[in-house]
Image (cartoon, rainbow, N blue to C red; front, side, top):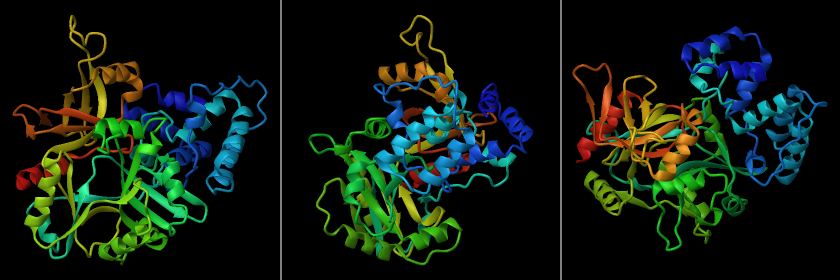
Length: 448
């Protein structure tokens, strides 16, 4: 398995990787490793590699006489961790024992599985081309884009407008075994403060945004705050969960199966208010919410928040139900054009300038190949960090902000006007398409 993974890393070409995967189409262990790494719906392990990634953690001694096989270790992940038969410190201790009983190569594979990344620069879509329907997509309800046509699908009387927090999305799940948290792509995270506060919450799924609060009570800027949240040492005492939705386990299961849910947002919001009524902690709170009866009211709240330096607003029809995919009754309101695109390379820095030792710009592209360009705007610290791990950065998703999207006369693709780097999106595995980008541009123009 270790050799197959290394072979997949030898060439970044999509056709090359697809060919290698198809060569091993009968390899059941490979399919199992791929599923247990990338299927974040069927497999969740409730521990992270943070414990073993810490600098002060003793490295594993090379094991010349392993007593466990790769399949033994995968069985442990599947039957003990994924089922939550063991959790917490007991899970860490037993996982540590498993690591020490594996060969060096098998340990490397299992660590990648727990990290949910085999480091082969190959995502769910490409894997499913080789092995149809192998990897499930996590449930995620995204916003539609506001424009004059989509606004007509909203019943504005009694609609809800909420702050679009300048943080990072998280889903928290409460059940009989405790509380867990994941990103929109299914990556697992631990937030002990929120986990403790939510230990007696009703079973279900809670959706919201994490931000970091400065000592003076203000919200830390998005890039810095999200960087800390996604680091190996998050500032847990400063992290706030602004929650905006609650979905029961039954309706969440319906959405997973693409069935139509029935509970309107007004009812879910009322239940969420009821759950939070006795909450006194500033680290969990209902997102700022207002009921409106006219589009001008919604846009007024949006402009007020944006004038305060915040990102914008979300407009929701009170009858909107929970669903997997884009919800046309839930619209994003903001003026700047933010697009999520994939890093495909680095432009070298100009000789004789301060960028000579790092790089001049990051080259990006949309997954449909219709948007291409490069962006800069990095701090010295980011330049040094990204340059030190170029190979790791290739394939990552970044948010790029721009003022316009245009197609040159002699180009077969679209370019961004004045692109500016915003942040790395570790919670995304796919990019915006040209269609989505043009919808975002239309929204910005309509709001203006």
